[in-house]
Image (cartoon, rainbow, N blue to C red; front, side, top):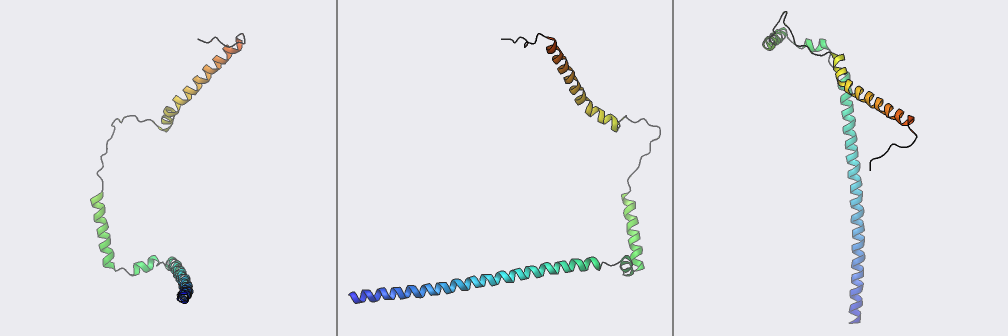
Length: 151
């Protein structure tokens, strides 16, 4: 019985060691694959960004001139375009009513509008300052004691 128990313990120990080495191997492979996929993704992202930058620079520098764009148009298509534009303008012109010598209601100008908005604040501030000044001169002329307080 003792030898079989020792043998079972030895087999358990060997199995654990084998599993540990296999797990270490799997973990290292997974880590190396993650690093590899990260590098591939970074390279793909960098290549895409570089390609987009090259395309934008090319597009800005290779913009066709007005002459090149007009060379591609035919005379008939230009005539059709002119007719279409004139039809659009004819349809969208607003109606205009002209009134001569008609009284119009008075609307305040810019200065008057500003004065109407600022005047209440200026008057309130000035009246507060005057009242404060009057209250201070009344205290200065007094006997130097505080005014009587209501109980």
